[in-house]
Length: 317
Image (cartoon, rainbow, N blue to C red):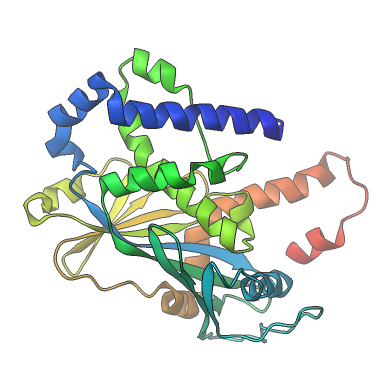
């Protein structure tokens, strides 16, 4: 699909989507009627969001150079690593049976209405690649109404992005499939957040695919019931110190993880887990993206459209 057509379809969808969830009487009646079992977005609040992407040394250099060149009037930058304007540095070292974690940067948003800062760090998973964790902190805990404002403020960042899916929302309204529209709220929020991240940082897989993501979600005590989390449809549930990590096994690309908690929150250190479990945890997060990548890179040779293997494909394989 041509980029302009994709842009128009996405713009039409997001505007109709916002109009529906704010003003459609049938939709709002559906939400009020099913609020208890939906664990309504009006009641939950997202505390922290993390995205994960994978970089080789050249891509890591591009990421760091891009951070160092950010507009100092819009961002306050604390960069932990040196960058060279016209030269690539070696940020990756030979790994044997263990790895370590390294801080990359903290970028503070000076004039953004919602995001306070993004902290990034990385760990190597092999000799050639590192996983970078981008942790987004907000100026206040993000509730339903704030998320709607966030989408409105940043919706134009979505247009033309391959990772932003859409559908014929008019048909969903006619068919009264309001549960699908409700479930789309979190998907739209995720896409806007990734688009926002992409507007600041030079991502790798994040240019095309939905990245692996972790959300820390606070639930009021009256809704924090074990039976609700045990019955999540098409999800795996892991109980961790009276918190529930819900893994969406239907994710098309990067893995989606939601940690539900009530009371005190302590963040999961994924970089330390990656440093310890390395490729096992990497494939847990990136398996589906890797399948897309290998199909894209290898099929053109099996289909005889290419007679010689490109160097970048050879190195990737």
